[in-house]
Length: 265
Image (cartoon, rainbow, N blue to C red; front, side, top):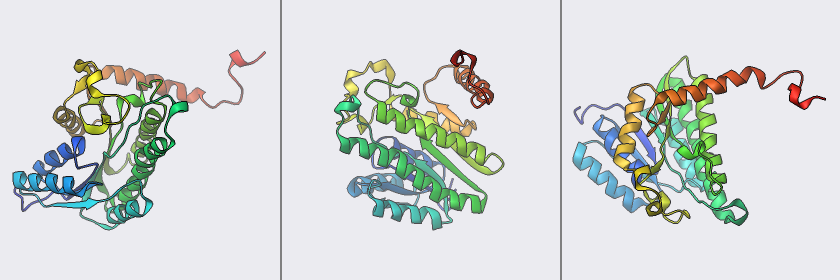
């Protein structure tokens, strides 16, 4: 696609490295201009310069700490008011692994602020414009640890499970529109999220660690296929379908006028 044509602006959070930086490259190659958001401006500038050199797309950077309410509000306002924005990748996230009783409270707070609060506020802001225009794409990056809950992942898994519930609710809410909503579930990906997390990526079985390029390419293949939930390394989608079918089968019995027989004398 010519650099003079555009799919609109794709906003990517956590875009200075890792998954976000690769999304920037791939979406620019698909014809999007970009707005890249992260705390580290120098790294953002480096990513932006390379993407522009490689693709010819227009790339803007917005340095913001999304755990800071004032800086978050600046990004929200841009998402709410810029009619050129056609896609948002909620990728920014942080991980900290330890038993909860031993957790650093600041690490707990940062995970909730970034993985839940900022994601929710940015989603709310961008959907204001998407619903007005009747179109748009929202990609929420969750994690395999939303399902594979570990003794040391209580807060991280909890925040990523929240992304599942939020995304599934939005998919129902927007089902009759042209707004696409996808949740992406990476397993272990070789990125800087592991640095200082309490788990070193080198400690993991290497057959369970995916490259960042493969992760993003698989996520976009899932988007192209219209998948609402993209589990990047799950070999057989029938396993997810069986899981979802079992969940749906429970729903009619989750709220009844009497307790289940096993709880009654």
